[in-house]
Every structure is written in C-alpha cells, then in structure tokens.
Length: 217
Ligand code: E4P
Image (cartoon, rainbow, N blue to C red; front, top):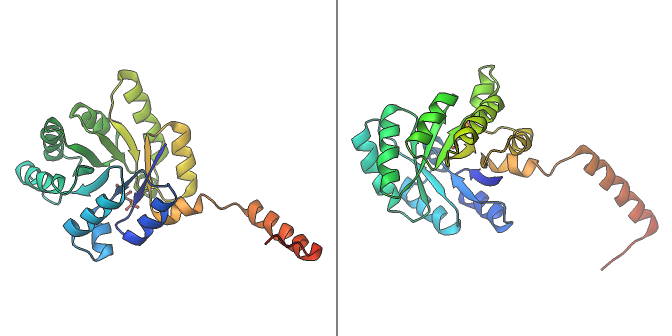
C-alpha cells in the first residue's frame, strides 16, 4: 500500500519524505488554508520535493470553471493530480482531464455507486472518506471493502485512495482490505510506530543497560 501524506505543511512532508515514507501528497482547500500559503506556490514546492502524485483541489463548482482551474493546476508540475469533487460537474471534468492525459483524484466519495461512476469517468484515484463516515455512525472501512470488490470484479484500474484517515488502526485495516493508497496526516503515520509493549520493553532494557554499565560508543 502506498502512503500519501495528507497535509500542505512543507516541513512535515520533508521529514517523512526523507525517511522514504511518502509516495505522494494530498491537499484540500482546508489544508491549504491551514498552511497559510498561496495554493500555487506551496503546491509547486511540494511537487518539487516529492516524486509521486501531488493532489491539488479545484474550488469551482461548474464543469467549465473546474476545467480551467484543473488545467492551470496541472501546469504546476508533471506530478500534479487534479482533485475534483464527486459531483456530476466533477465527473465531467474528470473525463476531460483524463482524456488530456492529466491525473485526476475524485474526492468526497461516500458510496460504492459514486466510486463506480468515478472509475467509468477514468479517474486515476478515487478518495473514499473513512473518518467522515465513521463520524456519522457508518463504517468507513466497509466502503473501502465494497469498492475493492467492485473494482476487482470488473478490472477497473482506478486506484483506491483511502482518505479521511484518523488512526493508525485505519492504516492497517486499509492495508488488509487492499486499498492501493492511504493518505493520512503526518501524526497518524508517526503513530503507526507506537506500541505500549515497545515502550515497556525499552524501559526495562534501558534500566538493565544502566545497571550493567553497558557503553557502546
Ligand atoms: C484527502 O484527500 C482528504 O482531503 C482528507 O483525507 C480529508 O480528511 P478529514 O476528513 O480528516 O478532513
């Protein structure tokens, strides 16, 4: 499973990228707002740092306007994936950009039917939002499983990009289901390293190392 990092914070992307943990980046208007940066500038910087796809989201609602924004975003770098919402206008934009050879990430997906339409429109990525479904008492992981089944049934090449990930547990569950990619905030990716028994074991080893006076360098 590929790891995308869900942030527009340059320092945080760099730290994970230097460790080889970043296969791509996803942003959205809320993350751009949080960064306090201009969308075109910060996206250009991210694209230069990361080899994989960098999703940049349109903000228009009508297909023609989305297309103009998508084409402008795509000019930033070759590794841009234009992010469009899962609306009828978004699907039209997806089809046109895909036909032009531009990667498209169809976002705000909350149902298997929406994912089916995105695949038909040629999306490079479909972004089902796990956490936001969990928030309304539905099981976001069930959706990832349903889309995996449907795409495998018919050999759709659209990549399942599990999004709105809120916990390290979501990451391993997505990997078990077979999501192609999971995008998560940096703190969630770092939290994957944590285990209470690792901390406990390390405390015991450190105490014994001190007692034994072990010195290595
Ligand atoms: C990713 O592409 C989405 O923009 C992001 O994962 C949404 O996450 P949230 O529901 O935690 O805002």
